[in-house]
Length: 138
Ligand code: ATP
Ligand code: MG
Image (cartoon, rainbow, N blue to C red; front, side, top):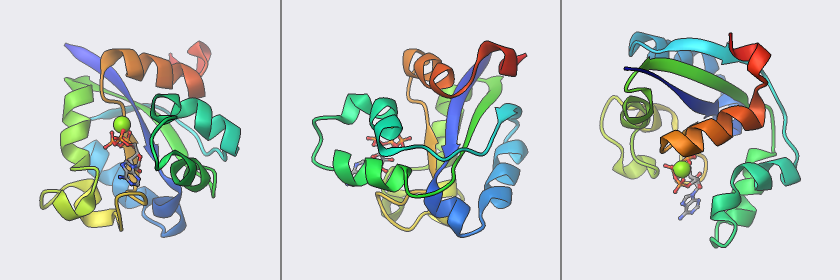
């Protein structure tokens, strides 16, 4: 069944000029890009996006990082999109990511790890709505 997920090309990857290469990996893997835009988010907006991690020790660093420069939020679609994107991204820490994954190729550290992908249907719905209006998703 066709499914939508939400992804972000994070500030480290945008700064290093990896946006096009990451999008190519995503399209090569069979995802349709339903919507994409360039955005810069404030610390408060990053805190809202990552609210589930508010009590984690890395929350301050993570939200500073995510508000440190332009990002590309996007909505992706394919069969089994949520799980397949997580597989394509690789492990959170690129040191543990499998060969060929986006994080293995483009991420520098557990914090500066190039890409975000939703981890479940309910979080995907929240995250899509956080960045995109319904009219942008037709
Ligand atoms: P994402 O939600 O960004 O797709 P993920 O689901 O693989 O990544 P989460 O556990 O949801 O990982 O953590 C969210 C983000 O917080 C990670 O992508 C990473 O940037 C950062 N993070 C997670 N764990 C740590 C840590 N121990 N130290 C520093 N940053 C971390
Ligand atoms: Mg996550």
